Length: 247
Image (cartoon, rainbow, N blue to C red; front, side, top):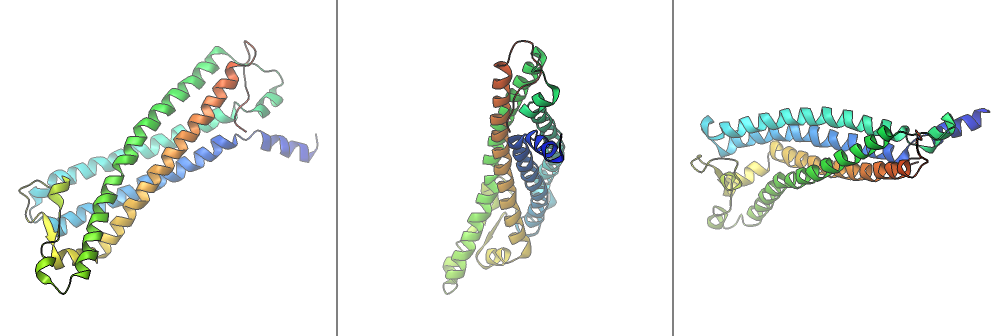
């Protein structure tokens, strides 16, 4: 076998759909976990500085942020390992693997393993759809805050109306109703929106939201890939070991 034939055979053995899904998953999880972790830290700083004067008012929020950050560590580790497993499954179910080993053999265990991957990936996609929806909430909060600040900038000639424009963190469940002040209004709110912390946190939440969307797309791609692999496994001859996959 020449060098060209060997290279083509190696390239033919790459499960391209699984590889694309893995790259999407890695990039999406990196965005979601990295930006989400830092955004939570910046959110706590904003609440502490501008919306609450007493530690007891935001201590619960601080604990929740800490728990979410621990969850982020676990998500990053889990998805890294799971994507590697799915990519390995893609490599072992390509047509090039058939050509390498000659006979088309698979076992009932192999088919059960592929169906298990389909079920787990489908459940993960459903759960991650909820995560994707929830990750839009902080973006919505900061979008409203930024829009209110722009309105204040346009109404600088009428101070009375400016003071009626507020963002109340208590309405979003970030603080208890007895928190003081719990909200920022008028010029104070406008000054908050001009800070580096606000813009940084807003951009981090947008990046985390985009990362959640990319991860959801990767899981849907994995579903297509694993379903195709299982379909080919099922239609191969009885007592065969390997099957065609996504190439």
